[in-house]
Amino acid sequence: MKTADIIVLDFGSQYTQIIARKLREQGFYAEILPFNAPLEAIKAKSPKGVILSGGPASVYADDAYFCDKGVFELGVPLLGICYGMQLLAHHFGANVEAANKKEYGKATLNVLDNHILFKDTPNSQIVWMSHSDVVLELPNGFKPLARSEHSPFCAFGDDVRKFYAFQFHPEVAHSEFGYLMLKNFAKHICGCESTWNMGSFAKAQMQKIKAEVGDDKVLCAVSGGVDSSVVAALLAHSIKENLIVVFVDNGLLRTNEREQVENTFKTRLGVDLIVIDASELFLSRLAGVTDPEKKRKIIGETFIEVFDKEAKKHKNVKYLAQGTLYTDIIESSVAGAGKTIKSHHNVGGLPSWMEFKLIEPLKEIFKDEVRKLGLELGLARDLVYRHPFPGPGLAIRIMGEVNTPSLELLRKADVILRDELKSSGWYDKTWQAFCVLLNVHSVGVMGDNRTYENAVCIRVVDASDGMTASFSRLPYDLLENISKRIINEVSGINRVVYDISSKPPATIEWE
Image (cartoon, rainbow, N blue to C red; front, side):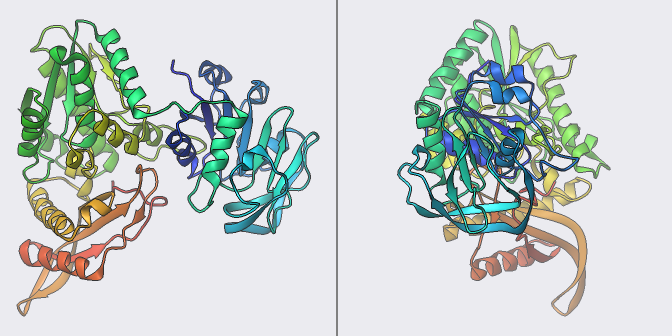
């Protein structure tokens, strides 16, 4: 089992993943575990420090979340953030109550002590608050380190046991110097070295893959997207002679996507590609299905069947490689105090009837790290920074049943959106952009004639890893051009709307 510099226990905060990302960006390998992870699972990671995340609960409530008490006896430094702070105080006997004045948004932090946690940060700085509870007094052995207008104990610590707590969220961008506080905790309190980077990760994965695979064959499933392309490149560097790369046309691709995938792997990556046209099989199984989770599961199960059938045509195939990311695992698990956000077709292991094992070399890293790894492996920048495209394809961008007429409408609208974004220079400024066919009809008028046709939603977001996202503030002129072209050029669509919701509370994809 891989060790971690810092373990982050997730108590359900929307910012938990950002804690891990901020640490990794500064060279420290951080890993997230649910708040109720068994103590032995935490010990097995041999962490040099532990961070307790924020969360939506109150420590004094009936539905409070508690980690194993042994976490406080690991003998390593510990940092509690927001709910984690209150949990730390509660564990050591301090009172935590509902605050008279809640704090949400920006606040001024006044540092009281020239502590190593605040190294290279000013004594007065902006931080981000999001809490309705307050610690009334400090537990024995702790001293105040900083305060805000409504939080006299905004930061406190015990230098003997190396236990520290922040009422604010240092991980979010609104906390001006929060990233430095996390760095100071990892480097100066926990004694971690800043050695985590994609170069070292690539070398370690190549060695691991070679040792595990040996002389056996690996079947690598690719979609043409960033994740599977990076997996294929990593495997090609490791075991090219034992690599079988397979692309399945599931009938849920965008316009000309199959041709682009073939060109990328055969021409640009120099990898032999086996192309399987299974579009009729996928569409027949999706007929009449409207539930998003059922769509995802049907697509995932069908992928596995197709790959298994292909694998049996080759000798010594014992492994299936796929581009599962850390974000996929987090969203598919009952992480922290929440429930599954959505299932991912490539998460959850293989069915018992399959005879080969999984290789998922990207399952420990975030999307932005995957892009860095791709560049490290020599992939072209335009491929590495291509917008994410989901494994289930256009099936989860069609509300309701997936069928050929709906796919044709969506493909035509999607081409126009991407063309306009690229010609205007906005494609590279955004994280992800796509159209959603709403399968909702509305009244319109074209050429003095009444129409009753479909509506399409445009979804364009800004993000760094897909765990959180905000809608892109596209210029009105650009939105107008996109709308005009879709309505004028795509017969069957008479209305275009723009999605201005962020993640959370919405997800990026609609299904």
